[in-house]
Image (cartoon, rainbow, N blue to C red; front, side, top):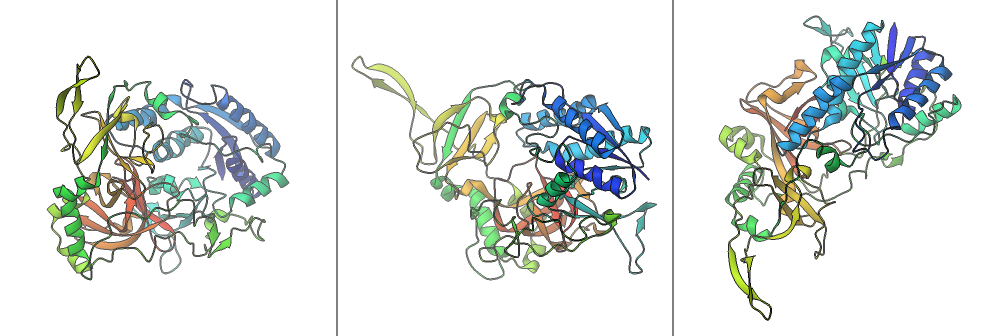
Length: 501
């Protein structure tokens, strides 16, 4: 079997190529350039050239052919234009998810196929396994052998989330040779093999664009426009009818009478990902870490401390969830609208000469605390780049309104505007990796859900209605921003589906 490895110059794809070569595959490497414009990158326009140089050295060291392909046109059309469109509409896209679906396992695969490849391999930390029936035979649906995609063994590096939009056809042509390894093991394999990329740092930033100053990048197409930053006070939520509706609805759905949890408990997303059962991740190469044909071997992953808190959570009644109307589900999933905070002006005299000036009257719900250069350059949960002082705790973006060009902010990690309990994935945006598990209207299931990369999996109800899938989390979620992807997993680490919310 002939396999093309997407060789980026990093250690992960380098070890992926090495393992495949050792296992007897007919391997060749291909480096893809997807970006030319370096005006917004932090490292200049020579970074991709350095990556290509290292990739060529790696291919030479391993002893495999090396090719170069320019996919910048496809990348701009399918990924970058999508980014600009989403940001201009006030949403926060995930270009890495689109890059995998549209480029690495589509445009790149087609380029590799023209060179004779049967499959493509990447350095993703995830695992692929055949879906087997009760007799141990691989399941075939619509003529396609069915595959499962599982989290990578290393909880600190699991990248399955980035592959949440892949289809069964794409999975059938994909290999993930390092998914059963931890990052320290990958580094050690690279060192033992004396690969030129062994000590190369992991890439950062937007997929194939690199580490960028995002506002500068977006300003290539999106015009800056000065607008107001409005701080939202707690008193707003006490008077807001939608917030009251969400609170009362959640209270009505609880199994036992009580006050629902509405505000997320802040915890670093990096905590809990470095251990298995409170034991440090092993740093040595394990016996059997290089099994032949390991892409068809799924090693059990120890239970991880990556779950939402079992102490602070809402326990909902399934019967009450089922009885909730479609209209109420839609309302429950909608964010709070802050545009009702209006400011009236008044004229006053200032200084010895009593010069007339204009100022905003005091508003019990909020206050204008600064200026910004474009609401489309900010995202919910952001705290850097606001340049707002005079507060005891950090200031976070809680909402943006591109129509009025207004940013709404709140003080502190526990600000009410930072948290939401329910989101909706519209019917046309639902993607099932496991189509045999697709939910029918009226059906409800328990899943573990991730709404951003490296986030601990969150326990949630998925409720299917004609207007889409509603995800109701046991614990409120911080920084929910429209345009992102939610991916849901089973209890045995399999990613089953996803959708943009």
